[in-house]
Image 1 (cartoon, rainbow, N blue to C red):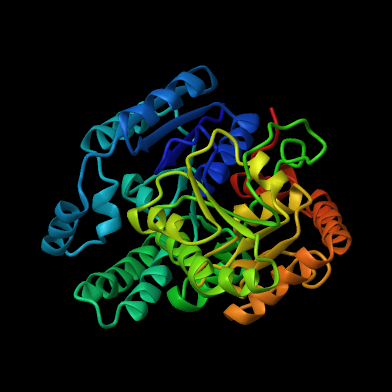
Image 2: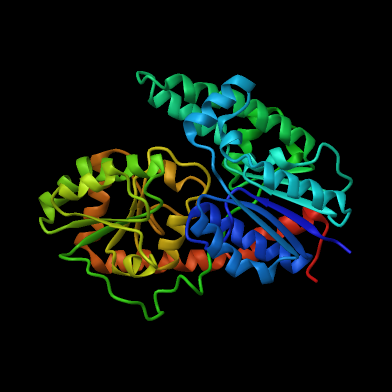
Length: 402
């Protein structure tokens, strides 16, 4: 009988951020095909406890270890050993021992690794299928950071990580039976960058739960303040999100407020950095911090914005907003990988003036904005169901629903 080992860099529950949304739905899909052993890390003890409470009864076995390595220590260790910093940050001797013991039992017939950091837990030899879900080409992200930080003291850290991690990603992909990425654009980039056989690299896109993200559901009201309201959602200690909201609050919102003086911008998401918190001092800006549910904020939005200067893969924040029938204004980087028609199901703009103009268009014409939101939701229902998005994973594993 098939049994699956699922290696995850962050325990999938709760599915309240981009990586955990994908890994949770992947776990649910795997569990329909065979019993699943989950070996995961958590950022802190509280996250580990929440995940254990939810997942213990759902897994064949569950092991979650809390990450303890700091970034400075991980950097020093990685430089000394010539390996990616990313791997050191997600290394746990306890989890590695657990995985070795589980594999030695002979019960595991299939392995799925989620995020490149977990490839270090893969066995050197394994008789069954090994699928590696890289999600994004992380080495390309660090290459972009290096370009952005060319004049900064730590430029060399990002440049080194791009180089070393890129070589590691290619090595892992050559040994895995299949490597997955969240969009065809990411898969194509990896094929070019790694020179791994093209038929071993696949795009398996994210989906969206349109029953949960449904504007018809009764939702709590939020204290959104004066209108109209633009909303951004995301993990607010993640650098691309920090850069995005800083740009919008500083350069774009003032242009919008020339036309709509009462316009507001809500930054919704956990762990806002000091730089994000400081934005609340600017006219019209609200920083919520962590909220129990982003849906009320999406429902309250007159426009959802995604002014990301750097974006990899498919942005869950856009899928959620579009499923909630919200009109979206996204940068070209954020919109890449979203199968939707610009001008009909979302608006795409790149410079500050164009993005401000797009938001103003939506604020000026609520009826047209509502029509765009309705078209966006229809597209999500037709195109982005999780079962359909993850079906290729089952084919690659050679498994069908139990």
